Length: 197
Image 1 (cartoon, helix red, strand yellow):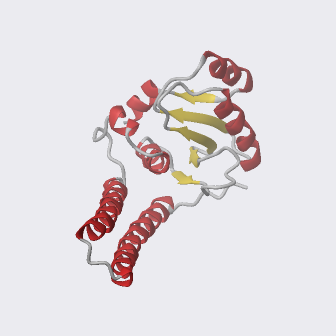
Image 2 (cartoon, rainbow, N blue to C red):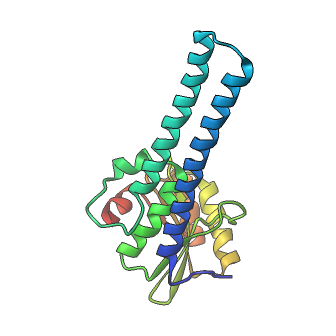
């Protein structure tokens, strides 16, 4: 069940390009909708036009932020460019995508994201020197608990990988560390991530 491929970076670039195109289409569609709402209402009230335009501008700025955020991490990661604190501000999907590039930069031959839904507790499938890894990414604001350990342990079996890993920008609770030790799940915390960067 291990779908790793050699062209995982180009797959990721296509995924990012698709996201950028989606946001551009959303901007254009919302602009058309805004114009339609203003024209169909027949209102010349400046307050109404200002409110509708203001909502569209907020949506436009949100889309621009998402586009710039996606393009910032497009391509191959280079060590020494990012700090762990910069990762704290990323959304979960961007963190998972960047984690693949970080793994490649640190000697993994292949690393690619699993599908967003029904991933069986695994966000990344990776391989290095014939060993396959099932990795769950947790971009959190607080220590990661036992649920992540349980999920990646089950996901490792589903994807038939050798090693289960939880990667986070934070630390792990004592219970998570204890369970990981019992199950043989590898925990990569903030300090490990800092070393990978």
